[in-house]
Image 1 (cartoon, rainbow, N blue to C red):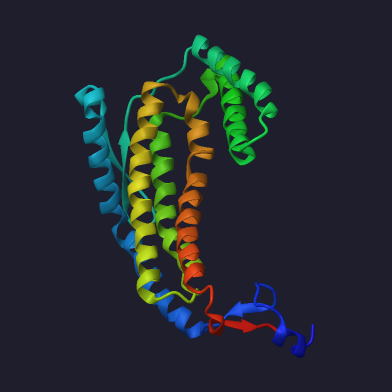
Image 2 (cartoon, rainbow, N blue to C red):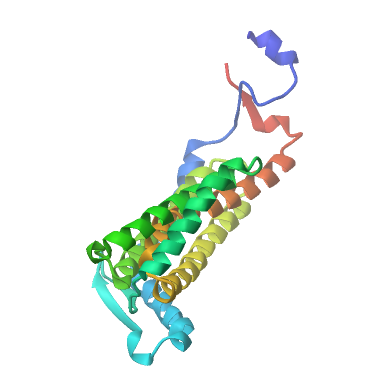
Length: 259
């Protein structure tokens, strides 16, 4: 398409890009996103200690006093705190019920016509739960993990998530032509939400593993773990972009044509 044709066609998303400065983006990234990640680098021992203290306080009414312990393990730049709780292995009957329910739902769910994205997500959960049930039915003695191991894996994984959330959101948000206040608020909200969500999920997952059984460890770690974090990251990003798109809808000067 030549320049004359582009001069008279309606404005749409083809052949255009958002105007912006790479130096402005780089400076904003250094001043806004990087400091949030550095908070995790230098203060994750204190953050994980606080998370464990809160988790122990919330779980204390459901366990004997001598079964909840906060322990420290070495990590990259200092110790990280984790909560140690008693493990609960599933009975054969519990595994059989879980396997049957998962198998029945795996057979019936393909008939669902609506909400395919949710249907696929549930299918993954059911399949993993079905395989875990079979494993514990026939080889429970070969399961290598206790709740304390999951607690350690989760906390180390969460530290990495907390570190990368500002970087990922910074790369996504900061190049956009929204005002600096809006960008900073979006990054800070995402960072704080990640901290609160990660701590809350930690408490809930430990409760499930110790009161239900270790049977659900695979589902909690692989499906409802870090994979779910991208949902709120994308959700908050979408809210920011939606508001920006409405604001820029008629501002043609903010766009540049690609030739």
